[in-house]
Image (tube, rainbow, N blue to C red; front, top):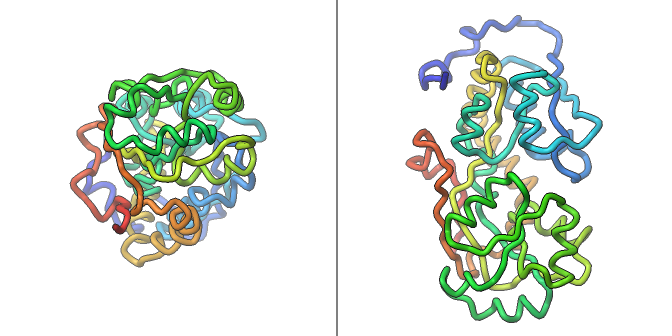
Length: 284
């Protein structure tokens, strides 16, 4: 059952937390090959939010990589993980309990394109969605982005393997790989041999990343929500966002790019699209 707003904004005293309890161990899934998972932006924000809500925690990443969909299933069934952060969809919000604060301010919906230099040159002249449709996009199996791209009439080549997607570009089996501003520079350095970031183009769709917990773990959900609201009010969340992601944003120069807007049909009616302060918008 979704949490009501008045429940989520409870004072710390209303949460059944011991004032001097030992830190709670929270298991988080290793869903990305990026290093230093426990020091990532989302992990540090989670720690700080729960500390602000009076629930100190110690994060314990799983030793093995766990795909996002499987990690969400682990929340409700086997309890191998306690918190997952991932892009939302109606289906995912039915599987697990979302805390509806977009922790990346929608940054995962700002997509730059990886391509070979030859394809990047052809993409330079693209100005509209119709002009983009002849190009094929590679995307992951069961990723929400795949359904979003397909819903906008784009030609999507679905791949079950993350590593294989970069190879498909180099082999000419797909034209471009849309990646978020937060991901693309790290991936270009590690997997992007022979590839470039298309310099003048950007895709955008509303794509909140939420923290998800098990459907019955309302205490943890309330604490995360309360802590996030307190960090936002103090400015600490924005400071952390810029500390971790500011360099990626500066490098992307989103305000100078042609932005092609896409619709996201996967969002639930509860998505806080009417709260502009929760979302990133580039300066022109």
